[in-house]
Length: 150
Image (cartoon, rainbow, N blue to C red; front, side, top):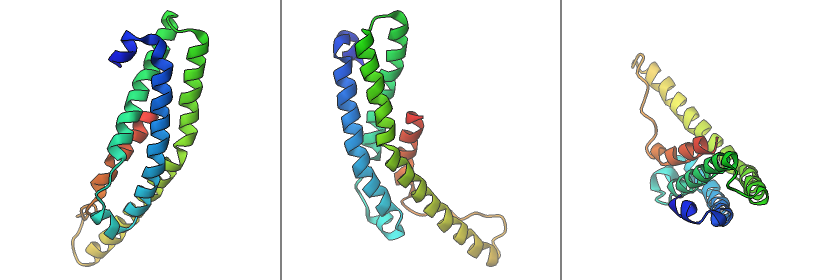
């Protein structure tokens, strides 16, 4: 963000590169989330692109919000502004498979948790929900990335 303030004409380059990085990371992340859907793989997996994609999307979000602010101040050229907005919008559709896979992964975790709570209820543990499956915290960065994108 500080680099963009020093060199505003290069904002488009930063947005383009961050967008490309987000697209590459989202493709890797889809594969990771597919593995996380499997309980055993979730425990064993050490790969995590969730925090990387979260940081990239956070930087893009910062640039996007500064785009709107500076457009209001008319610092940006119309062409650069329009191209940057187009890149950010196209990124939304490029990361859609990631959000769909995240949704599937969360659904699997919910199903696993509800089946565990059914078992614990039948065993006499009234009102006590079982803890989330081990490894579930590994998807938190993806959830944060989703909210940054929204």
